[in-house]
Image (cartoon, rainbow, N blue to C red; front, side, top):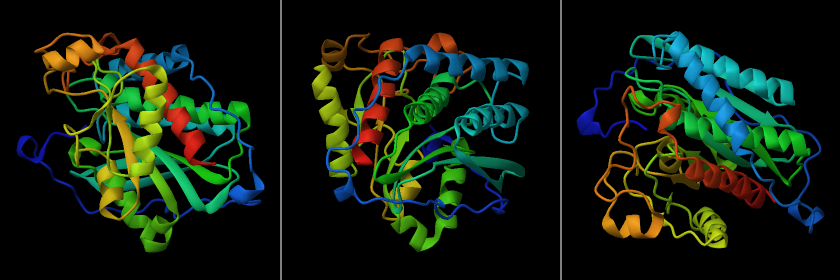
Amino acid sequence: MKLPLSGRSLTAGAVAVATLMTGGSVAGAASASEHPAAVAAAPDIPIANVKAHLTQLQSIATANGGNRAHGRPGYQASLNYVKAKLDAAGFTTTVQSFTASGRTGYNLIADWPGGDANRVVMAGSHLDSVSSGPGINDNGSGSAAVLETALAVARSGHQPAKHLRFAWWGAEELGLVGSRYYVNSLGSAGRAKISGYLNFDMIGSPNPGYFVYDDDPTIEKTFKDYYAGLGVSTEIETEGDGRSDHAPFKNAGVPVGGLFSGADYRKTSAQAAKWGGTAGQPFDRCYHSSCDTTANINDTALNRNSDAIAYAMWELSR
């Protein structure tokens, strides 16, 4: 998650196209009425698989100066890792390039064949870290969970009525540069095809909260229903409002939602009573720091939020 405007310096260069993604090229679309009871329940997302992706991202950072930041070798290696997994699973992947702060950045878009290309359900996360650390919670956690959800789609052969798309954004930490570029590249017609964009930025915080975006009522209810089924209370997300990659979509009129487990705000006594953890301490004491490693993850939060991503993607794509 990027710093608030008052706490960051943004220099984004002119954005240049490498590959333009305007909407999935899909055949055999089907309407929801043709699938009356059709879609199976979402699978459980194996936490061991999500953590294995985090281990790989940590190894990439360690081998590349301790970070996976925009324009650095660690970011390119992270993108290559995710792309290889998706290509092997049968996704159609597209890489977009842009320029920010004098360096080339990249977005990765993955489309699952099938579904109505005029009704796209999309999940995304930023793949870059800050330069000061490996970024395993921020935002390896969201990136790994979105990746494993995409791979679960492939393993199950899931074919919902709507078209599924997944994305990993570059240069979020410089001011949402990659996601803004993607939204602008779609044009109004492409944006109108997106039924919902779901954003996942920091979902494994070590002193976690359970926060749900309240931007779109249908998406919000989907996540709240999931957590109600677990008996876990949620709160409306306010700390990161407008500070992550949902913002360019929302500003363009696309319905958005998402999950968040907290950054440098401090957990209140009431929140600690509700969720456990330590009152008076940040949700993530290693936010934007070198200690944001694989040791900086709460497995319970990561597991619950990963399963919630799959639940929402299955429910909202019916």
